[in-house]
Length: 320
Picture (cartoon, one colour):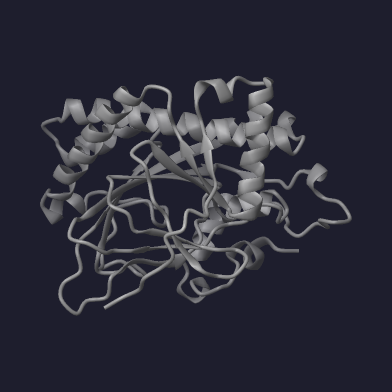
């Protein structure tokens, strides 16, 4: 029993080859325009990362093989992954709002070797050097992609002067996720419809589809088809508020079909302080819609049970 959705490739696909990523080049400007348009209209896009395909395939295999071993650890070990921040530690069906098919870990400060090493030592006290190295290489690569997308967005809006200070206050959370196969008669919803509270989220998967995006225009569910080198770049509620409502925060969910377990990673970017809405993004067409806000305050607000069904978390938390 469960849900089925459209599989038409309606989410923009943007080529992130080296040729398109040389700052100030014609291709760079074109790519910036495509990225901004995709985020405004869809809240997301599929980035086709085509720089060192062979190396990326090897890293993919290492990451997802490592994730399988991680989820095979005893529950008492997995539950050591705790955090004082909401949704930053180990989650399974015992946590509020988490459905039975879902299980996930959180790695804080994921773009630093110290953050990755701390997590790996927690899970494998005797060490797991190869997975630690692979995980750090992966998070470093994806966090660089996030910085690149952010730079494109800031420059496209003419607020590039704020980019460096924003990056200096950015931290990353990597979540490794597993969705098991539903049992007979069990709902096939892996994650209910929601928007992320991050600034940007970058998602990648092991070849098993299941992620769906709600179309902005007509509320249809679009089932995404990932290529092995595809990364979904998605704007979160913090980006929506920062852009003064210009960028769309995409509603998404996970529906599990087929006979293979789904493993995926999601890199979430968070701002460590107060996010200000640039004056340049306020005009007659877009009057000020949001007040300055604390990013982790936004996440904490969402974690309250009474706020879970709020139509717009950002609007309720920091809306004018």
